[in-house]
Length: 294
Image (cartoon, rainbow, N blue to C red):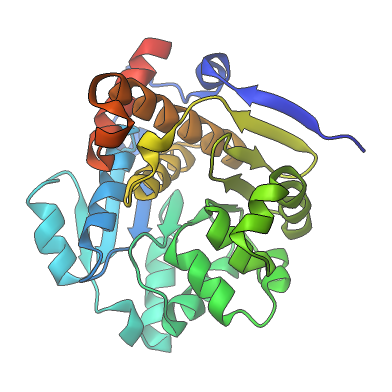
């Protein structure tokens, strides 16, 4: 069957952006819980949190190490902090407790700057087997699955909750057992095949970012090399997590996030060039792109 291919453009974003009724409060716009950041990658947690806050989430909890909290709290007083030990030291009891605590979230994001380790994978298994809110897996969460899952297909197919993935070509290649070059040469076919096989919502990064859940594929119309810097993906993950927390369906959340992320990079590049855009500048510009569309 020939795939259905549609563009992700401003009209799509306008149609699927969550509503913001005036008679509302912080609880009206969801609670996102992020598990991310580590001593080495403190900035990843900050960028993911900033992306989420600029995308309108009502409440944001960041579960991370003390060193990360010291860094992020100076810049983002809006975040609720949950101090945890480094995830590489988590026991089965720690994992069970954190899973239970995350049950009250309306979306959960795992991976930005976490560091790949076996306890992270064990945590992902436990989370995926609990019924609940959408689970967004990015960065080191994908690395942990690729490194430790005995069977990646089984991990995704047996999940008891909606799962969304945001890999770049190298991360996706590790999950499916091929090189980034092979992914790039067969982007459409591989994205469709594995999104449908795994039963997940998939965003495959790259020029013409793809979003799909099977036969129906959306191709993003924004973005450039301005986004090709460490930390850019963390912003995107936080933004998508915020949309999921506000009740946007996974495929639409991925598509909206991709469009606004790319549009922000494009607009900033007009002033700063594709060389000069910083990931930390993207969240504010993404909010401006929403205002343009509205």
